[in-house]
Length: 367
Image 1 (cartoon, rainbow, N blue to C red):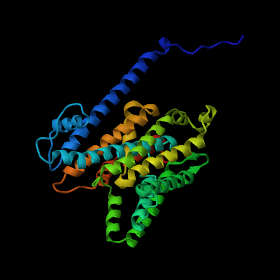
Image 2 (cartoon, one colour):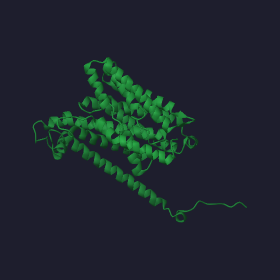
Image 3 (cartoon, helix red, strand yellow):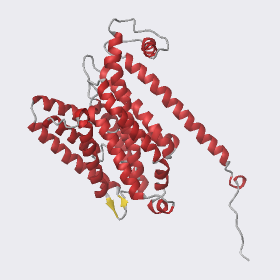
Image 4 (tube, rainbow, N blue to C red):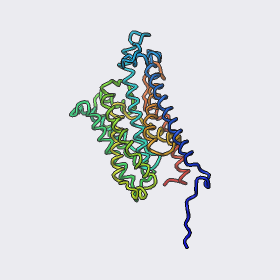
C-alpha cells in the first residue's frame, strides 16, 4: 500500500500563514501612506522654496483657492501667486512625472531582465532617447508639432532597448555582464552621436544639447507638462498590468511558460512601455540617471519583490526622489540652478557599485 502524505499544517511548521499575510498587508499599507504623505510634504516644500520664499500655509491656501475650496492667494509677496503658478508648480509637476516615469521604467527593466542592475540609463535607453531628441534640436524637425521631440525620443529609446535586449540574450537567458557591457556600448555610440550633433549644431543648439546631457527641469512650463503627463500616466497604468506576469517570470522562463505566460511577448511589450516612459522623461528633462536603479531596489528591500506593490510604490518613490533632487538643485547654490542629473549620479553611482559587489558576492562571481 502506498503511503499518502499530507502537507504539514501551520501548527506543525510553526508558521501562521494568515498572520504572515496580515503583516505583509500592514507593511504595504504603511509604505503607501508614508510615500503619499512624503510626496505631499515634498511638493509643498518644493513649491515654497527658492529665492522668493513662500510659506507652506500660503502654498496650500493658493491651491485650495484655485480649486474653489476656500483658501486665499499668496499675500506675503505681490508676485508670489504668479511665481507659484507660472514657475514653481509646473516644475514640481514635471519632477513628479519624470521621477515616476524613470523609477517605473527601472522596476520594469529589473523585472523583465531578472536582475537588479538593469536601469534605463545603465542599459543605454536614456542615451538613445536623448540622441534622437538632440537630432530634433539640431535639424529643427517639427513635423509632429510639439510632439516631435517626444515621438523621436520614444523611437530612439525603443531602438536602444531592443538592441540591448537582443544582444544580451544568450542561451535563452539574459546575462548580467552582457547586459551591462551592451549598455556601455550603446551609451558610447549614443554619446558619439551626440558629440557629432554638437559639432554640427549652431551655438543655440549646442547650449540645448549640453542641457540634455546634464539633465535639468529649468524652464519647465505647463505646455511641456501637458505633453509629458499623458505619456507617463499611460505608461504607469500599463506597467501595473504586467505585475502578475512579471512575478511569474521571476520563477524562471520555463515555469512561467508552463503557467501560461508568453515570455517573449511580455518582454517585447515591457520594452515598449520602458521606451515610452523613458522618452517622456528625457523629452524635456534630459538625461537623469540612476533614479530607476535606486528607487525600485530600495522599495524591494522594504516590501519584497512582488510587482503589484513594487511598480506603484516605485512610481511614488521616484517622484519623491526627483522632487528632493530638484529642490537641492534650485536652492543648493545661491543664484544658480545645478544640473539635476549630476545630483542623481552622485547618489546613484556609489549605489550602483554597491549593487555590483552585492551581486558578485551572492552569485560567487559574474554569471
